[in-house]
Each structure stands twice: as structure tokens, then as C-alpha cells.
Image: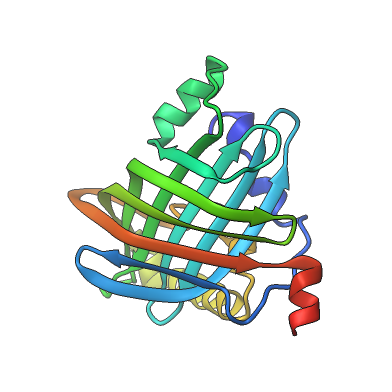
Length: 220
């Protein structure tokens, strides 16, 4: 990410992990196939805007579906337009506000090619609707179109084995509930290169429900 606006990844490692309830859910229909996973949440306050990421994550194989909300002031129920990363950067640079804010919806799936590559969906268009939100919870719905792209492990990482080792390390942390602390950006794949292959992804009937903080601790 070239702009300070998007350097939230660097803050992730210094951010505390919030307690989250066991029934946190994140589900959607991806290219006609139903998918559901445990939801995680990460919130980072920045000087002139707020950032909230919600994601469903599973391992073996790794599959992650992310919603990233960029908003001004207090997060409120409402509909957030899904933009491309380039559109989001442009609006921030020009200080263009919407009443609520903006959203990115992104997808990544580990492939079984040599060295374990990734099939990703980059945010393109759609909407995220927050139906309820409090200091300790958020829920809503979403639909999106994504630009499908592919990443392949670099030859050196594949032959040397350290690419696979890095994948396994991330799997362990993700399975323990800390996936958002090691993957600040869903398309941040170590030791990979993007290929020329593309394909569109469609996400429909998306739903999320996440609780954290004091509410989560009382529930556990």
C-alpha cells in the first residue's frame, strides 16, 4: 500500500486481540457455492477516519472472505458502497466523503498447484449493509463482484521449502483465531507473484455477525 491511509497492516501486530464469541459467523454464496466460517474482527482507529475489518477464515485449505469498512466518525447502520482499492485511494486523496463511508470486499483461497498458490478476488463493486452495530457487536449483509486473480509461489520459495513453511505457520495462527494479526491484507502473499490469469467472482447472500470485548467475555 502506497499511502499512509492504507498502512494499517503495520499496526496490526501491535493491536490487542479482542475476545470474540464462539458463535461469530460469516457466510456467503461464492460463485454459486455456499460457504461459512468463524468470523474474526479487527478495529484500528486512525487520525481522520476509522477502519474496521471483519473476515471469515478457515484452514486446510486456507479460504478467507474479508469486509473492510472505512468510515468517518461513528459507525452507523446503513449501506456502504463496495469500491475497488484504486477508487478508495482516489476518494481519500480528494477528500471525497459519503454519508457513511466505503467498503472493500476481498477473497483469497489457497490452491493446490505446486508450492501452494492463491486464487484471489479483488474488491470491485457491490454493497455492504450494516443492520445493527454497538460498541461490542456488528451484524449485516453484503453482495459483491470481485476481480479474480491468481498468485503462484516463486520458484525459490517452492524449491527451498520456506514458502510452504510460511504457509503452515500462518495456518496455525489462523486456526487459533489470530489470522487477522498475521494477514493485514488478504492479498499479501509472501514469496508469490501475480500471474496473468483472471476470472470474475460473484458473492451473494452474504451475512455476518460478530461480537467482541466485554460482551464476548461475559458469554464465554
